[in-house]
Amino acid sequence: MRALLCLLLLFPPAAAPSSPVADMHLHYKWNQRDVTSPADALAALDAQHVVLGVVIGTPAELALELVRRDPRRLVAIYSPYRSGSDWQRWSYDTGAVARARAALATGAYRGIGELHLIGGFAPKLARARMLHGLLALADDFDVPVMLHTEYSRPDPMLELCMQYPDVRIIWAHAGAILAPEQVAGVLAACDNVYAGLAARDPWRFVNNPIADTGGRLLPEWRALLLRYPDRFMVGSDPVWPVEQLDAWDRDDTGWEDLGRFWRFHRDWLKQLPDGVARRIACRNAVRVFCREGRVSCDTAR
Image (cartoon, rainbow, N blue to C red; front, side, top):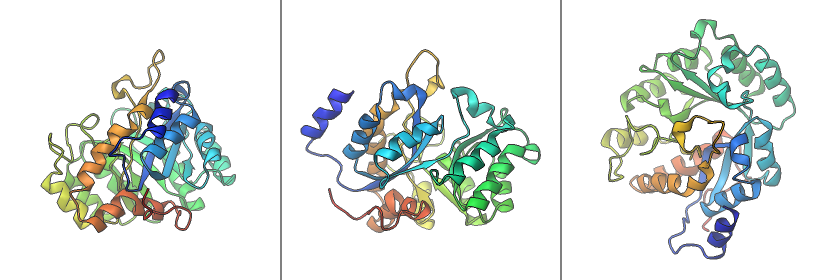
């Protein structure tokens, strides 16, 4: 992969992306490290003109490997996941809150997440002690928390965002399997929720796409984006192949598909008014992660 990235940087394609973007959903995991070095990852971000990247490490320290190489551009958020299977058992880890507090106290992490709340794996919200502990920490440290909810109804997100009105909640995948009218209900009820559209592409959450098979933004999603232009962000979520769920015998090559994911997002962003597209593609994430003055969404490559 390193050789390929070097060739792309030396001989970029004629239609190389020029508009700056903020990638609010990047992973750097133990099973990506062997196939994508930190230098490879930064080169991939350069190729896509990513001016801000929000990195989730598994384990958490891996995110800092990238941030230390480019602290102006990259932000780490703290993940309680230490291995691949933690996405389904983290909410029962009684040490998660204490580790998160210690990590946030260092100042190295500017958020918490991605926390998976998936029906059948997560406890009922009233008994989700680790979840409530982490949300309270986010309030204490004034950092955002990224939640991945995967339920047939938006009720769990509504319950949480109303209970923690002062916590900036980043809703990963904009509810994952929810329809736009369900997403709209949450945004109307809770002005502390920001919806990320990472993985809302033709290859991941395909049951409720934001665009048709020709890449045209669906009318109901377009209307929602125009209604809440300051509440949406975009990311790549470079996890691939997605169906393997961190298989022990296969590396995750998601970073090699960064360009594919961003081509999809850039295509539908072009279908929005320029000012709205710029906010969703870059400015909203810069504002949420307090990067004003450190990165620019207006520079041309």
